Image (cartoon, rainbow, N blue to C red; front, side):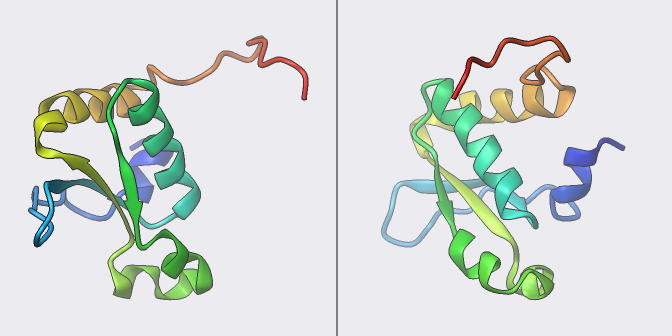
Length: 105
């Protein structure tokens, strides 16, 4: 199992419609920073993705499993594309090589 797969909550979350919105849950992470990283990959791929409960998780990481982790939500029209990006992320396709030039700050 990869490190990223450990951060994802056990079992793939069911795609669930958020009440009153056109947003569906595509993933959950126990570590807010990892959820933010995946959200960035989705956004960079042209998918409008938002995080839900990230601030709640950051207040007390020990409660993260009980609270359900950080959810990543995308519009219904982007579900298939989002799933493909999540699978690519888990395969390591977004990883940088050791000699990658990330620019200077």
